[in-house]
Picture 1 (cartoon, one colour):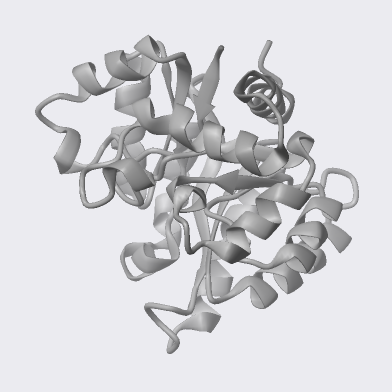
Picture 2 (cartoon, rainbow, N blue to C red):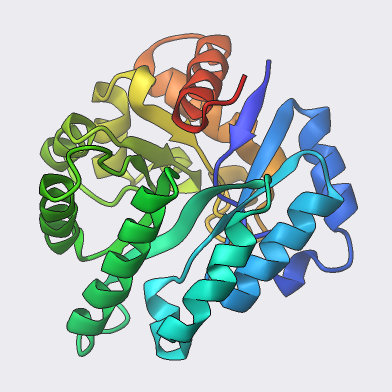
Length: 260
């Protein structure tokens, strides 16, 4: 079986001393590719550096809504330079977050709009963050799609936070849904409903390491080697074999990124 971890922050300090071992453990259990999303210009640079250091690692570049205070439009040229690297395969982690900040929604929307257009102009998918902001995010994506009918942006709703109806709407818009560690928790009833009903053809796997470890490792650092635990939970919810989950989710990433 082969898996892809579509979201792991391997550039975080918690991996600094053993990142090579972390990647090897992932390979040993079948995780063949890992996407490291950038949270800021500096984080994006680190993601690209890791991608060029390890064949299994790929980078996304962008500015997380929690980091917009450090973003300037002057940085766009530096993102333009980064995107020329062939191992940069997506724009992210970008999005909206009204859990941590409610006072700067306008600024969050402005920065997200910049990176949606950046993704569209470079024909790259996006990795979207949403925390208590899904309605605003849907509205912005729909407006962007109306203005970009020649090449509407597609991508992944990372750590999808919505209910089944919202999940179906995201899928209808052409997006994939990221399933991570919380799907393994016994009390994650909303996620269980979403990932039992949404077709496997629209699901991708992620760890969000070092955060949100699966149930068997809660309280410890998360890492890509735990992807099979998440896959098994999806298999249980979908009443299928883990091999089917591995094949479908890996194929979904290949389709999104035009990987062969």
